[in-house]
Image (tube, rainbow, N blue to C red):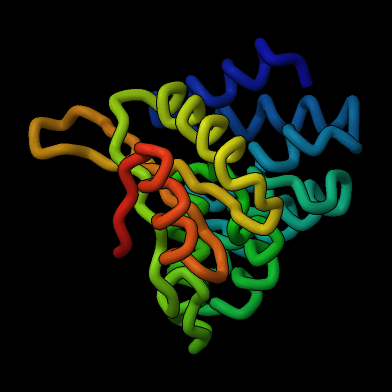
Length: 198
């Protein structure tokens, strides 16, 4: 599926033209049955049209073509959460837990899946090293590189989490995840990098 067709399908969905978008994705699938992007788009259409069984089949087909794909996994996980099957959602999203630069909706779906599946998340159980709030994700990523050089610890991972201020402007919170956040902060503060625990 060309990027142009993908953009066209997405635009149709944004305009509420669900049936037309589905027709577009189905025409791509008829020509290229292994097009994961088209299967995923069809899944979104089916879901919006209330055709739940077909949505699940389309998402599953896309995931069989591209196992572990983040976008498809997140869509199918969201579908399972809405269907009341958080354990299935968690199984799809756990491989992304602790990775950097995850989309906000995936982080929220993962957190919801863990809570609803009765599992306390690592994120909720332990403190984190808060490395600051940045006006852009690029500045937060620059800070990650500085911090990585100071810590020199491969077991520490970083998340840049988008948030919205009261005026509606996005900001980006940078956190470090490690087994000993107190140690992370003390090393960074010693080098002049602001850090606190939360």
